[in-house]
Length: 242
Image (cartoon, rainbow, N blue to C red; front, side, top):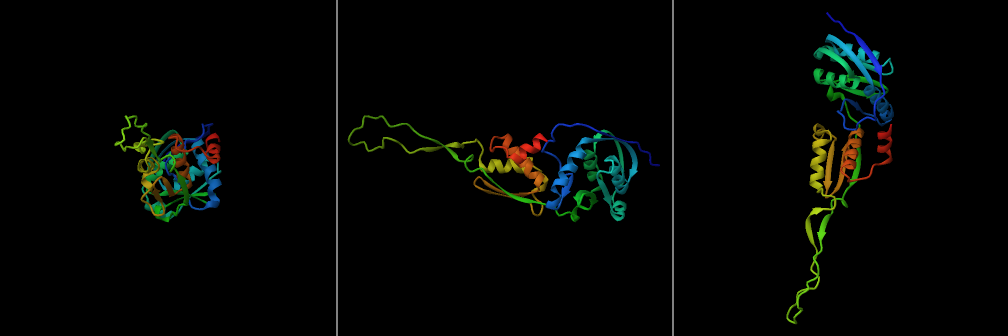
């Protein structure tokens, strides 16, 4: 027997952290603005929910109710019947976290299309990606040591140069090497995504050509800013101050 209680409360939250799980995919550039509004709303809303044998289709109905019909959720009957049912007992959990749990339990994925959130099979999603160039060659330049002049006696048979050639110190201006930055990005920014089709990271000795989802680029930029490798863009500042 199903039993549930549903209560949502709109809360003020601090600016959303950029490091977040890939819970709500996006496929079209025209949906970017609506997607960001939806993500913010899903983080703000809290749910108290106790339910047994919840199907994905029922879940979509509950999520639509929880947002006050501001967002519509939809799942096909075939996908709902093929996926496992869920037993949920949530108290004060955000709708965003609830969706993350549902994805793990059902093996389905949420995707934002034309203002509606669909729960579908992962192979039906073609995520939107952007190619962005991050030029960090100056930050990865070797730091040089400049030896002082040779203050010898200067004998006529001594042909040593007065000023010796500079040598590399073994570190870089920022303290980060190109390979180190690449490893850090792969390990900290959506590590599970780098093996997916269409997602690429090319490291050309400090110039990084990265094709990733728009939200992932926000996380990449935020990571580089925290490390002191670049200044925040106006777009990132607007997102942090929202």
